Length: 185
Image (cartoon, rainbow, N blue to C red; front, side, top):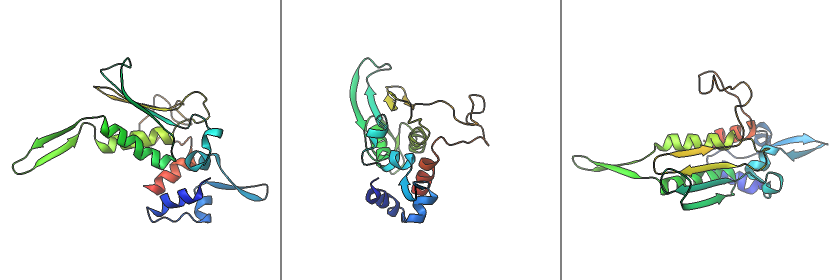
């Protein structure tokens, strides 16, 4: 685990990553009389995470038109997950339109997709992915008329296709990731 990098992410939001904080977030556990990183910690901040989770990457692509027949740009993001989120959002912003409306005095710019919605969808894809599924990873596909964000794994725990998105239903496939991202804001 790259605890130096992890500490920098947490210090940036004024939340030092102390030993008790590492334990409360589930990044380390006691095993065999010593502290060891959890799988969640490896996925978040593992120096060699692809050795253990080879598909813990995010593949982004911008297609021309409304199908996958013509690429404009593509990239595979393999960074610590908090940084990967920033990189994905930058990719999406670079490949989606920015509109503007002329006001009485000033011009107001607005993105094609609400930034809060894009951010939430990307973070949810990362936090709720099933990293144990081999041959799959998180995918972001940008088309002329839509963005598709997908991750491996279906509904988890108490979540079903019938109650998905309804208030009062929440479950976490990766509680360490959820806790870390909550603290990181």
